[in-house]
Image (cartoon, rainbow, N blue to C red; front, side, top):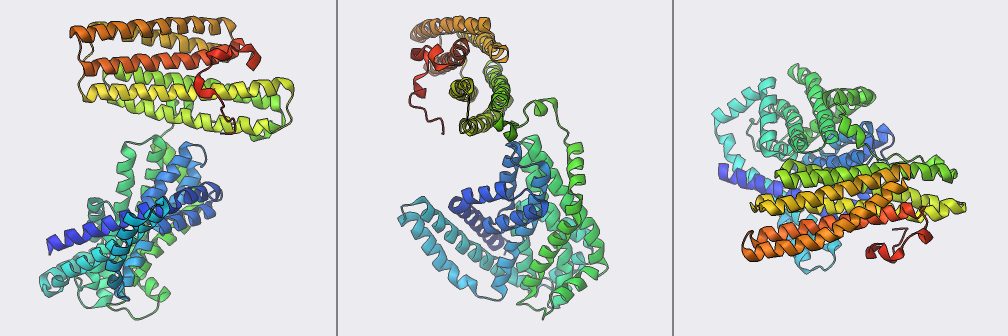
Length: 569
């Protein structure tokens, strides 16, 4: 029985994952657009969260998308919490799907669905049709998994002791709630734990008195709502602080909801409300539907209670996970669209954001080189996080400048604008090279590749020169400092000479056996990336020296990757 239950649960979880993946690939971009555009009002955000989660059958996936929008500044924390409220409602759709097995013989269509889905994955050529095949395959596996669970649990009703133990546990709501939470934490899926409970009840594990079985199962369902919050908490442990705030909001939403509904279950009021709202015959064929309804009712009722208090919940999450100085520094780009009607002011605002973007790119480079020097995996992850903010800056500033280019501009603005676009692209490419250096550090750590003393000294010298050049360029951007821009060009000449000399000397060390070939390749990759960063910084310095005009630039010095650049892209 245990082996069959484990196998059935595994098939159910695997099928749910395939269904979720298939739907996200078929309609992922559209769903993201819906989330971005329709979450400005709290009630609409709840409805969107419920609808999208019901569609893709994954509240975790919706939460991840929402956190991404919060990080990009597209959604506020308040809006994100409203979407999470809705996601709690939407995730109950799984229980309704499972309940259909008590009324319809959907399992009869499961095997054909698996066959059709697999054939579509293999035979179809387009990604959309392959993803649709994944969705159908997942659907079939979900119901095959439920059948395995039914077969596994059917002998339980023959054990009077087991039935009485489950009924006793169900009539001790605190213990039952705790058991439901622990099981959900164990399987890391509220859908799977609730489906298991539905099948247990329907197969007679809680006895043949269906009203007693139903009331005994209710505390387990409430515990399931608490247990599911652990998944978000675990995911947030390695995520940013906004993720932690959303996770804590999710936890408080469910825990406080259980706190006021559990006494109603204990007093017998909650089951009577359900029977009143869903009149009908409670029996083996319908009990799973009643459980699904109770699960949905809890989350709908909880949303009605919390929605007017969403501002308070947001403030509490900010108290639990306060804003750090670094987070304040890396806040999303804010470019005022109303200033587009005054192009000179809009361009000045864009310059300030480009200055902030440059400082972020320098932080990414510093974190990457420190990760290499100190063999520190934490700084590798920090580099990637900072580079994400650099990418966000590029997207926001580029969109803003393109919007500005469509206005009626005077000559000064019209000639500066394309140069600023190139500056933004140069800074984004510097962020990419910083990540490359972080990956070099990762390779060096994982493969335990030591640098020779001379290689360490050489790399430190080139890193220092790159840092000096970067700071000079930032000073030039901030104050339009020509002297700093010329100093940056002098550093570029040094970096070019260093690249040639260090490559030659390091190849000689490899030939002499002073360092391994693998460590040598890592060193050369580092040198090349630093030199390329110097090239991009040179582009920026020359644009400042040229007065942000193309005719003031030495076109031969611009990086070749910009030839034919589509400014709209």
